[in-house]
Image 1 (tube, rainbow, N blue to C red):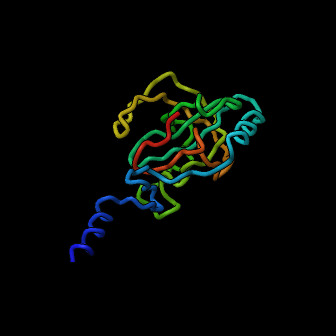
Image 2 (cartoon, one colour):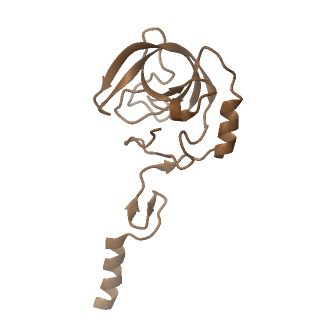
Image 3 (cartoon, rainbow, N blue to C red):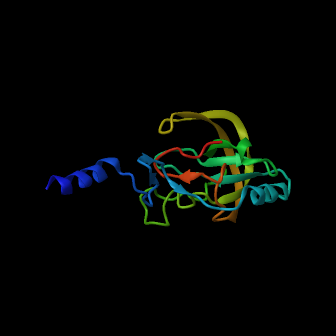
Length: 169
């Protein structure tokens, strides 16, 4: 009897297998891989972007936080992007929907969408108590969807977890 229980006990305690949730070798890696282009393909995409008086924005939604996502100048790498809080006094965010709406029709539905963003930094900072960060405020004046599935943001190994900050430059 103990020969049957001992291997079972070891398996339950060690959790040494690999699971789809990111568990490997007994340690937990938060989130799901975001996929996307190679580093070379991404660098080529960014280098070929048209320049202008706008920003490239990537929506980054974490449950209960008030920041919008990352903004960078066209042609600049994502490592230069700033996490921002959007001021919606002039234009509402694309995902301005109820937080408890039906799936696909709620705040944050556009996680990781990439946008062409018009507006300007106000020079003010905003405290987001749920992420415990002081972030720059951006006055949104317009936006245009570029793509829905651009893939990873900072690194090819980026993982997204809707309840935890996993994406940082």
